[in-house]
Length: 375
Image (spheres, rainbow, N blue to C red):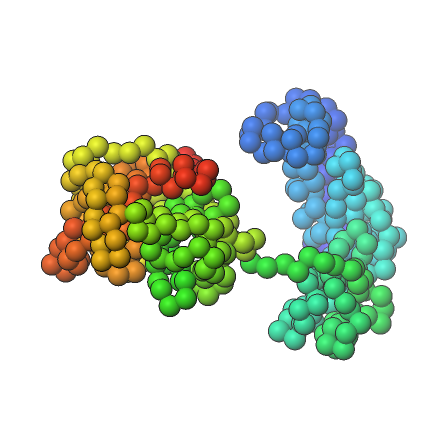
């Protein structure tokens, strides 16, 4: 079927849907509450205007691919206006303008098709490894009919060489926008994952607002710690050992504390709180050396006389542990219990392990445990 023969059916089916949106918005079925509430709060809209906007957006999502197929090489992208009430469609020909109008959308005549812009993108992507740090990102910006390049300094020689690869600079397809973004990956902080302080390897205990808690003997205050991936996590803000065995690390912007602990099935257990379990209760822990191990609590408020000095207030268990497990999380159900301190034996022949309860470190430094609910 050609574009010419497709037009009548397209216009008939789409025009009715798009131009009747005013009435449909009033009679549409209620949208799921969470997305609607998010838009209402995030954009300062009333509930009625939110419902109208989301209904219009849903219709636009259905209309855009139909117009893309019908317009072919004339298609130059589609976008909603600033109010979210009208679908605008870029076209490169007069015939394309007529088709878009008959479909009930608003045409915008532009110089370059979507396919042309995507070819510029493809050229940049092919040479992405050559992009210097001063080039932050690039993308097709359909409202301006250009490929936007976010750059801290586009005049540096390496940046100029990279931009020349686009094959789009000559016809004005590239639009350089000054940027101070410097994007970086963001990693999750999760109980049970390893971290390093110098040559010492320990385990993350529990996420708190702004960082995580672990064992004090893992690192002194002021130490810089790195994550499992070699990326710096942050700095130890406070550390106590002996007498107690806890520390907390303030993480940097590359890390997001999550209310999770690695579990025995390879997934995450969501931490719901920190209610202390009774003697005899089941308890499980995760350490980056020995993984997920479970047993029972044998005693609380135990004083352990380590070679470095006595540590008070620990909890004794019949669970094994080995070097590298230190600082790791202990759970009873979904309740955070504490962080691995030390013990005797190993996970081959069995052993005894003591953990530092988590609530004292939260209280000592005014920290808030990251919690969530299981979906």
